[in-house]
Amino acid sequence: MGDPAVTGPVRTPSVRPDLRGWDAPWAGLRVAVTGLGLSGFAAADTLAELGAKVVVVDAGTSQERHRDAETLRIVGVHEVRLGAEHTESVPDVDGEAPEIIVTSPGWRPDSPLMCDAAARDVPVWSEVELAWRLGARPGARRPDWLTITGTNGKSTTVRMLEAMLLADGRRAIACGNVGVPVLDAIRDPEGYDLLAVELSSFQLHYTELLDPLASAVLNITRDHVDWHGGMDAYTAAKARIFENTRAACVYNVDEPITEQMVADADVQEGCRAIGFTLGMPSVSMLGLAEDVLVDRAFLAERRSRALELGELADFGPIAPRHVVANTLAAAALARAADVDPSAIREAIRGFSAADHTIQPVAKSDDVLWVNDSKATNPHAAEASLRSFSDVVWIAGGLPKGVEYDDLVARVAPRLRHVVLIGTDSSQLRASLARHAPDVPVVGAAVREDEALRQPDAADTGVLNGPDGPAAMRAAVAEAARVVRPHQTVLMAPAAASMDQFGSYRARGEAFVAAVAELMEQP
Image (cartoon, rainbow, N blue to C red; front, top):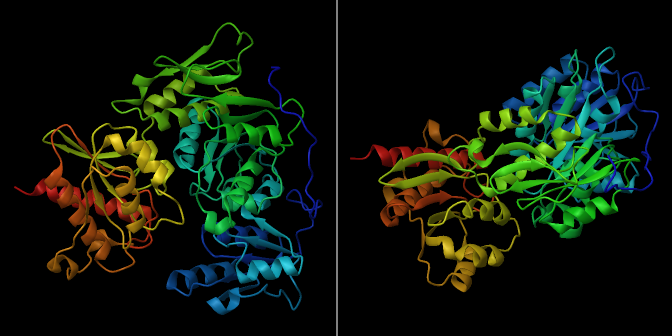
């Protein structure tokens, strides 16, 4: 389709180029798999089926880990070693060093085992790299990949993309970091036309090279710098998604760093740079023409006209700006795969965001209560806060080394009251004092009887006993005390959950339960 194109030489994998396809020489290959979560289990299971000699190591010793280990032994995994003592160095396989390590996303590059692997020059792959090399089962169709990364919005975008593909009659599935391991998807006996693949920076760090039909970076902001060792390394990991793309590299017009990633990428001949924007799109972009989502990229007459993909009204009563932006990114990937505009509109109308993502949970006395527990960093929280103009904000948690000054300075005019949760929210409190000094801030004080209350079924996933749910009940009670009609109580923590909860889901469930309890009070 012409302009603008991305040019550059295509890089080829530097490690074991012979290991591509189901019939490659996997049999007898010595492989160590680190981690026994969803992706690690899928990797070990797949490699055992291929005839490789597999040793799995995992620090966990729970009953669930032991059950998974026994299952893997039954299907032919050579050995499973559970316990932290097995994760300090590269495990041997049949008395020799492994030829390949396939790692789960959570294993940091500076962990002892990964440092040992680097020192011994043992290549480390993600399960995504393994899946790309395998492609598909013999006799099954090999799918095209549509890949998505970004600091925020990946899961919603990949699910929206899946909905667009299905609405167009394609056999497709959302996979990767979204829940279903890519290895499980490519082992489907029939195969898929397309995979909508969510990729985290962790997975990309350990991935050599893919060949996606189209790829997208939604946004980039400071996150996971502790894992990567710095912002530059984090950004470089995200940028890997554009490498070797065949048809379209999709970038965020409003975040120039993503366009620079495209400019720096080595892609296949004919690949195009496609922008998405919440403003009026130029040629080779998707964007908004007033309240209409339009495509000026994937049509021959793009210099003089645009294709209508939907309207803001199709999103329902709430159309948050970042959700619209992510939908345009998904639409760009779908259009790169020749999805019809009518299917995109059908998907938008039928789509509902995942729980814990700007999730309205109650409305009473003209007060809207919204759960966005998945807003685990300042960028995500800002996107959520910008969806509302009059906010009582419940925030705080484990900050992961991020700064809050910019966030608070930008959203201060929207804040009416802030209720802090988390075991230590001093950093956020200090930013509020500097940049929103007129906004009242209070901690979620837990009464003694609440602190002694035992966790119930709703508290599943809480790490520190009842403290997390008790703090959330206190935060909801405080928010109810200060909120006024026509305001929104928004729980968008801008921090991770692990100081008080097992996951952002557990934190969101605690908020939903606390609001429900409040609504039941006379």
